Length: 192
Image (cartoon, rainbow, N blue to C red; front, side, top):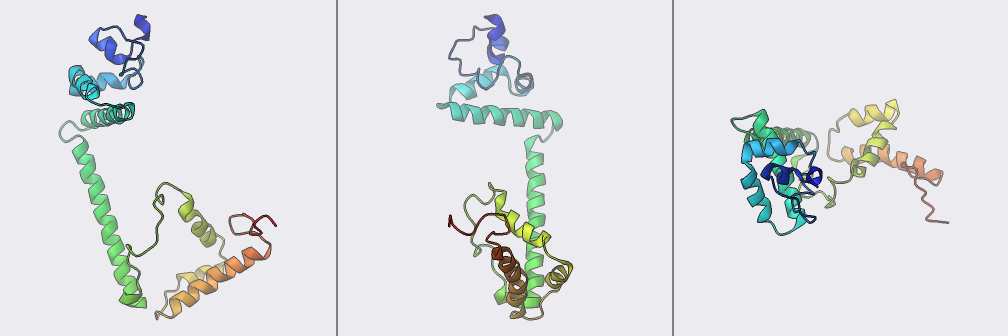
């Protein structure tokens, strides 16, 4: 029975009950628990997990404790805070790049023609599905040299942008639909 104890019960030198709340999150061979108790202490970890009602909450808490302990080992002074600052810095840089691109695009097509990011339709699961950009990327990869050159030429007026995009991507869709299949290989016949 002693060999089947979870990591928490081993450290606390207790018997591991069959329905032990720690066992699913810290199995007996979990090396990360030693790091967690080194940083937070076994009693504090137990108190955190004991105060949570649902197993899903305990799983999230156990993962957060693992992550925070590993971050504190890597960077004893600032731990997770340093990583948060790094990600905020990356996000700020991306936002500045977007603003710069919007301003540059506005000089070519007119600022009133540049779509605002909050106006663009985006499904709720956009970041969860890798398919969201796949069809667009596939279209770009399948362009011939002439089409790529046309796409790379920035339009001089707002009227030219839709015309160029439609001429390139409209032709691609027409070509791909002629054989009854879309660019992604799916049939357009709807079971006919």
